Amino acid sequence: MINKILSLILLILMSAALANAQTAEVSIALNEQFFDALLAAIFKNFNAPEFPLAVNNPKSKVKNPKSLVFGFDERNLAIQNPKSKIQNCKESIRLLREIDNVKTAVRFRDGRIYSPIAFSGSYNPPFVGCINFQGWAETNIDLEYDRQSRKLVGRVRVLSVNLGGVSNLASGVLSRLVQTSIDKKINPIEIIQTDKLSFLVPVQNSGGSLKMKAVGVRHAIADGVLNVNIAYEFSKSN
Image (cartoon, rainbow, N blue to C red):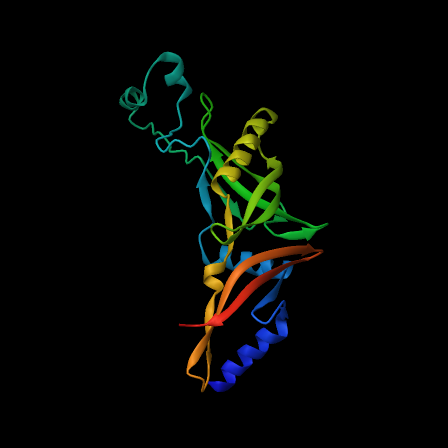
């Protein structure tokens, strides 16, 4: 037990840059390989993340063009043709690990965070019926530290949307829907919550513990790596 505590203290002292006797910073380097492994584990062990399109209507169903033209509703059509069925169209976007040789990933380039996001989905425009689509979005992630909530959060901005398997006419509408949906449904992304990074370090044979309180986060982006610096205050635990 003593060896574990001493190892923890030594690790902290080695990775901290002391500002004064009571404060320090701990540096964490998160490279692209880390995020590749993280994303691979998420898509392997869990269902693909899915969220509704911005225009989603939970009761949305594929409309039969004939019913719109001639004024029949689906119940009348079903009576006339017992074999007819109304297919549900789940207007949503599902994030994928890879599509068309483009993988969902996180990349650090030129002081910015870029993230290609692969996806598939469906949309039910009037008079047309259910349209299945797939593609990928090129996005930029802006990081900021919210001092009020004490969280490091990311906000995804869609730079472009690349769709496959849809007409040029539908492509423009779908691109805007995908962009709006990502902006509304994904943002903000909670990356680090400082409350969860605060902890106690028991000081053996001293009758007490040292409290390490995370009080701030700053970050720096280099090629291929995100450096996160967590500021700590040290105090005696009551």
